[in-house]
Length: 229
Ligand SMILES: Nc1nc2c(ncn2[C@@H]2O[C@H](COP(=O)(O)OP(=O)(O)OP(=O)(O)O)[C@@H](O)[C@H]2O)c(=O)[nH]1
Ligand SMILES: [Mg+2]
Image 1 (cartoon, protein in one colour):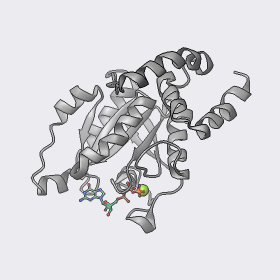
Image 2: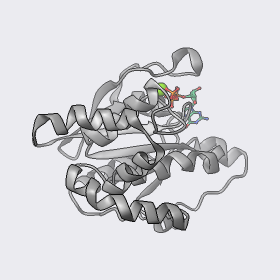
Image 3: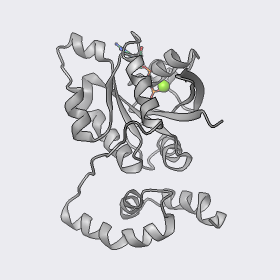
Image 4: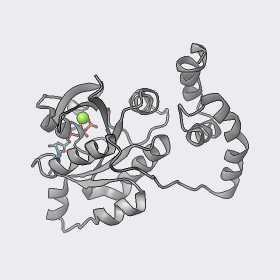
């Protein structure tokens, strides 16, 4: 399986993750709104430049804390299953709201591509998106697509391939918190780092511990600490 890579699709509900997944894999994952909402992890493959991308369609969530099963499923997949690339699918018509989740993902993992979908709808509404500037500001690739019209796919697939092969590298921006929180992070991060090593982002785990996220702590114990590694 050395030529096979896992690509996770994350994003807010209704941003077109399943539409993109179906268009790329040729499968029929449920799409639509509430009734067809993705609840389990669908998997399908895409071949590109001699490589196999195993796409995993995650449930749509507004955040990646421990507020619901969907959030836990998506979060656990990204941090513990470690996909080779996480594609964060955003709705071009409500970018500001959607960026919240993108920034959360950037705290969890570095191999991220932001995929701005519904570009057809944005164009209709006169919304112009400067993908180059966003790429520069975020420190990760930003690609514009329309999953419904199947536009932007070649660049998206090339970008995934270039990230996997190391032709391009991600240097995600770091969200800086108010001084009191940064102080707390500084205090606990060294301990967290001893515990999780380089398997998880120690800054991200520290932030969640400051939140009092016991569900995550239990998940870490279950998945990592009890295995004795
Ligand atoms: N105009 C336009 N509509 C799109 C595009 N991509 C998806 N949609 C529509 O957006 C709606 C939601 O699409 P889904 O693919 O189900 O969204 P999702 O992100 O999988 O949703 P959840 O599984 O609930 O998280 C559907 O009505 C799609 O047809 C696009 O590129 N352009
Ligand atoms: Mg879906």
